[in-house]
Image (cartoon, rainbow over all chains, first blue to last red; front, side):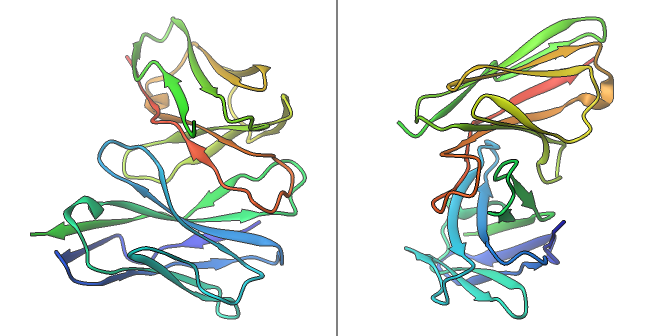
Length: 117
Length: 116
C-alpha cells in the first residue's frame, strides 16, 4: 500500500507571485505515476500535471512545474505567476501501474491555496 | 470529447428511498471508478470497473450497489442510505485499467448527495 502526505493544509500567495506546494509519498512500488489535481469551488477535479516515475526530467505545463525527487519520495508543485483562477484545493495523487485490478489514484489530504489580489 | 458526465448534479433523498447515480463517458475508456468525497477531505475510492467487470470493491456497504451495463456507462444504485453517506460522489474514467503507460483519470463534476 502507498500513502501520500501533504503537510500544508492551507497556503496563500499574492497574485503574480510564485508558490510551491509540498507532497511526499511512501511506496515500495517501482512503476508509478504522480499527479497534481486541482479542485476549484465548483468541485470539478482537474488534472494539472503528471510525472512518470521512470523519467528524471521534471514535468512542466505552462505556469505549473514539479520538482520530483525520487530518492526522497518528494513531489512538489510550483505555480509561477499565480492567477486568481488558481484559487482551489490541490491534491497530490499516486497511481501504481503494476496493480492488475485497476489504475486507481491514492490522494493526499489536500492543500487549500488562496491567491490574493 | 474529453468529458465525463454525471447526473444528477444534486440529489436529496430520505433513508428509505431508492435512487441511482449515473455516469457516462464517450472517450472509449475501459476503466471506470466511483469515489466518495466528504467536505474538505480527499476523494476515497469505492469501486473500480475494468472492462465492465468489477475489479475492486473497497469494502463499501451493500447499500451502495454499482453497475456497469456497458463500457460507456456506470451506475451507482443507492438504497437505505444513512445521513453519514451525504457526500460528493465522483465518477472517473481512464483509458485502460491495467498498467497502460499513458494512464490518467478524467473526472466528472460529481453528484452532491444529501441524505435526510
